[in-house]
Image 1 (spheres, one colour):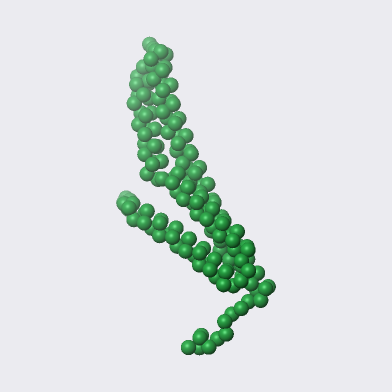
Image 2 (spheres, helix red, strand yellow):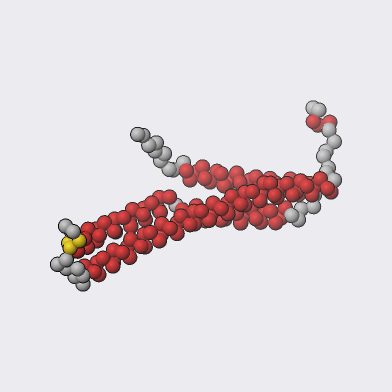
Length: 171
């Protein structure tokens, strides 16, 4: 009851500008930075795994060509002949490449990088709009939009992770 008897808060121009700056710098800008760095981190992880997959399959082709050309035939490296080495590499390199491809697919680095990038763009648009608001009502409505966007992203993450099996490693 005491709250309803209070006069509505109408900030002056200076406090309104400070409130708008607080929204933009302390809340939205921080979230933009988080999403930007997270997108970059996951994009780099995805590119590294893609490069590893490519490298292992390229190495497999090189080994197959060397084997077909009979490079090193009749020679050995210690107890292992070149022919045996070619055979071992022809079998293991694609398996290792496939393992990296599976890790890349399971971890969904590319998908996560894109999600973070899209959220960063959405927050940047909201930040741009916040710079142009002229009333406390507009600022409150925009703050609600920011909150809704972040809550939606959290719900999406929760939904996505609800399909992941959690496994606890034991010693």
